[in-house]
Image 1 (cartoon, rainbow, N blue to C red):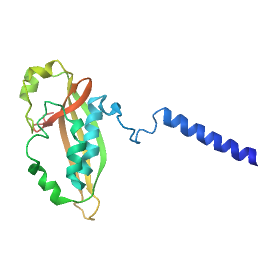
Image 2: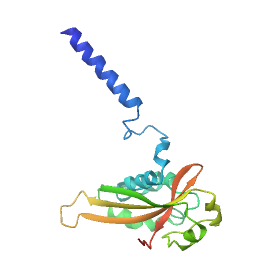
Image 3: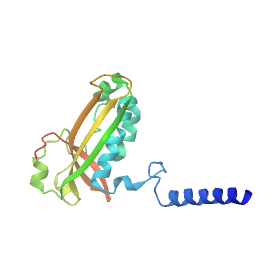
Length: 180
C-alpha cells in the first residue's frame, strides 16, 4: 500500500513537471513570456484578454497595455481623461468567444496610408515598411458579469493594424473602415 501511494505521488510530480516544462501551462504568468508577441493574432488576443481590466481598473490597464502597443502607435498618447468613461463604468466584465484571423500581411505603403485608423501613427509611414505588418480581424464578446439582462453581452468585430518592433508583434491601431 505504501509502495503504491509513493508511486502515485512520484508519478503525479513527474507528470506535473513534464506539463510545466513543456509549456502546457501557458495560462500561468511566468514573467517575460515573449510568446504573446510571436504572431499578429497573439498580440491581438493579448489586447482582448486585457479588456476586462480596462473596465475594472482603468489605471492598471493603462500600465499593462503599454507593451502591447507599437512605439509608433498614438493609442495611449495624450490625456488620461480620454479613459474617464471607463473609470465611471467600474463594472466587472469578462471576454467570451474570441476569434482572431490575419487577413493581410506585409502591407504596401499605399495600403498603410489608406487605412482609416482610430489613432494616428507617430513618425513616417516609411519606417513601417521595413517591419512586418499585418491586418488582423478579431471578433469577441464582452459580458457584463454584475448585471443579468438581455443586454449584458456586447459583440465586437474589429480589425487591428499590427507591425513588428524588434521582432515582436505590436498593435499600431484599430482600423475603423473594415472592408471585406
